[in-house]
Length: 296
Image 1 (cartoon, rainbow, N blue to C red):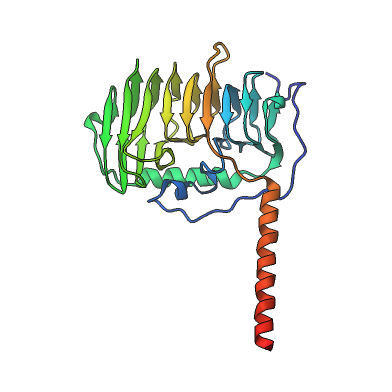
Image 2 (image 1 turned 90 degrees about the vertical axis):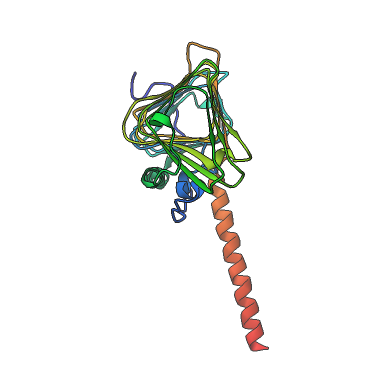
């Protein structure tokens, strides 16, 4: 494939888009991800990802942090119900599939680094719960009421309707560090007990096996795979996917099935400017009131 197909369209860069980095905190999945988190993205690919192919529906924003990243969107019914933010040098095919705006020339290095930092933090957490054989190879229920549960696994393999259920209370956190691969075939990762999808993260460490999901698989959790390639051919995913391997394939060009991502979007670049102006206005108002009080 040519690096710059004739149909390639990249919109002009817009200034003013920026991220802020909260301090990383290992006890909270959301905080640890910083600017790479699910309030900003449904799909975020990192600096080493060169191909992102989508044949499905993405509800939320896409971030392409690699300067040589190609976002290849299939024709209808593929659709991105959100914005696309691309590192300088990245490109997009079939931009008409994006219902939101396309911002090129962005600096997504901070989001990419936040994802890498978070993965390191999660990987260094000591496990608090142990499973037989450190692997999941069939129907499994994980019960935990701890504020933070950490599990180390070698691999996840689920087939033909098998389910991994994580049961924990609301406002608790579950971190699952996986050193090997994940293969889902008509299988599901489900939550129970009140825990939310953004409070459970599967952190795939190292540059190991490609992660795959086929059939009508479902993932109700964050997936952080900063060095892995992804091949999710069909199904549904609620929350965010972060990947940094050479290729990320979402949906199957040979099927009518789609892989749907569901997540909120980041503010428009202009929103950050409005917020800044508002804060400056509040500061000036407070200063005038203070000076008036001193003069009285």
